[in-house]
Structures are given as structure tokens and as C-alpha cells.
Length: 426
Image (cartoon, rainbow, N blue to C red; front, top):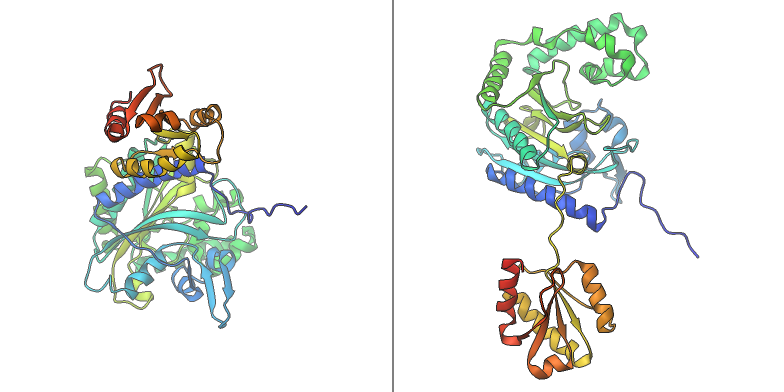
């Protein structure tokens, strides 16, 4: 006998019970996002590798070590998307969405990174993201941040804090980069091999290190805010004023730099202490140079992505999971004649009651066995149909969650009678 085939490490199944929680979260996300006027964009799971090398940055851990890349039969290098922003920009350019327009877009789906699986971090993970294009001011930065904050309220979540920072203009960032390199060069002997590599390729990433040995060095590192120019300060001050006016709580975190090369000006994260080491549940910022970098006209842009696995885990940890809606009706039939009659009867019921959840017994069995299945299904009512009911032109409606009596209901009145009972929850 052959052994069962396990799932790929770091890529997980979702059982029906787990899927119900995901559907609950996804429904709230869609409703909130679309309530702000954002429209869904769908793009492929596979992209050309160069898309991510050009956008995320050759020196990032994602491109260097974590992407699932391979050559197809034509010798072209393809990659399973590790994030959504680059794909969103590419799709927007390819479909003319960014030309002289200010689209607000959202997307969702699986992303892939080859990293060590742990709680809240998987090799296949799922993101919801929003991106807004063509608007340069801090007002839209505030909008996407406040949108995310509203999501947590709709989901009933607490224990989530907002951290914000600014990376400034490219010129301000370049000046800070030079000062940061000079600082860490003095302490090169305290840096491990990975940190020394980042110092040469992407020194701002040193500030994002989780290595406790580097914590004292990072704490004493130069402050990026000292290198901000007037434009950078005005943008960040404008964002803070808007968040203050909206009553949004936040803290400025000078060491928040984000892990992708394309960010400028605003960066932010929503973090929680309820999920262990993986504390960021939603991250984003402004990336005004990315559209041009990928072949479009200069276009300001801002957005964020949240990890669904982490948000679902938070919903579960805080007891915010809603039970799935119950089955409304379980149909039990006895005999071939009743089974044939039920086929047409149930389809007419589904037409008349499109929102009703109706489960029909399959696989045979006596009436006692079928009623046990009906009870296990959680159905509120059972509809019983046999030769006696067919001869009488009616079906027996049996309440399963109360002591109310079983009643015969003529076929012609069945939809109306059932609709009334479902509406009255009796």
C-alpha cells in the first residue's frame, strides 16, 4: 500500500471549518475596501523574474534567496510572485490603467517565498493589498492607513498599533545612506557576514535587523530625520496632521525602513503583540518611483498589503470567529418514487428560496439513519418525503431544533411555508 503524499512544506491546506473563517475575514475586507472606492485587479501568479529584480531590488533577501524561480521550456526565467505591488504596477501599465488616471485598486491571492516556515510565516501565504496611483499628497497616504485601521474595527480586533516613518525623497535618502554607511563601517568588526553584505548593498536594511546582537548598534545609529529636506518634512507633517485630525493613534518609529527598495516618503506598519515573533500584520508605504522604473511615466503611488494568515490567526485568538450559517433544510426521502419526485421539488424550492441552504440526503439509508444525518448537519428543519406523502400531495416538515410538532405541508404551499419559518426562526 502506498503512503499518502504530504503537502509541500510551508504550503498548507484549509479545511472547510478553517475556510469558513477565511471567508468571514475576506468578506469584511472586500466590503471595507470597496466602500472606499477601490476596484479589484487580478493578475497572474507567474511573472517574468526581471519584474521583481527591477522593482524589489537585486540586493534584497527576497530576490537573492527567497523567490521560486525557474526556466520554462523557452528558456525564459519565470517566478512565482513573492509580493503584489510590482505585479499590480505591471498590470496597470499593460492595461492602460495608469495613463492620466488616478485609479484605486485592490487585489488578493497567494504569494510565494522560499523561507523557513514558522507560525505566521509560510512559503505559500496570502495577501490582500490596496494601491492608489497618481496622487502625490499625504492625503491619500492617510486614506490607505485609515482604511486599514477601519478593517480592524470591522473585524472587532484590538491590540493593534500603528507605526509610521518617512524615508524622505530619494535625495534625502541618499544623504542618509552615506552617513549610515560611514557609521557602520566604524563598527564593521561587530557585523556578521550577512550584515556586512547588507552594508555594501542595502545599508538601510541593517536598521530592520532582528538580530539582538545588533540592537545596541542600531539604537545608536544616525537618525534619518536629521537628513530630511523641506519637501520630506512637509509631506510627513501633512500625514501626521491628517491622522491626528481623524483621531488615529500612531507612534513615529525612526528605525522603520521596510524591506523593499522602492519605498520613498511614507512607510508604515500595523503591529501586534498577540502573535509572537511575527508582529507585523499590515505593511506599506509610498513608492513614487516604481511606475517609472518599470517603464511608465513618473507616477506617485502608495499602498499596503496585509497577510491573511496573520489576520485570521488574530481573529481566532481574540474569539472573533462567527459560526457559519446553519443548514436550513435537510431533505430525507424513502423509496425510489420519493427520490424521483424530490429531484424536481427541491429544484423548485431552490428557485423560490435562493438564499436557503438545502442539503439533500444522498447514499440511501432508512428514515432513521437519514434523520441522524439531518441532526448532524445542524439543519433547522427536515423535509420528509415517502409514498404516503406523495399520495397525499404533501411533505412532512419536521423542526429539528425545537419541540414543535411535525406538520404536513402541501407541495404548492411548501416554499411559502418554509420561507415564513426561516424568516421567523421558528
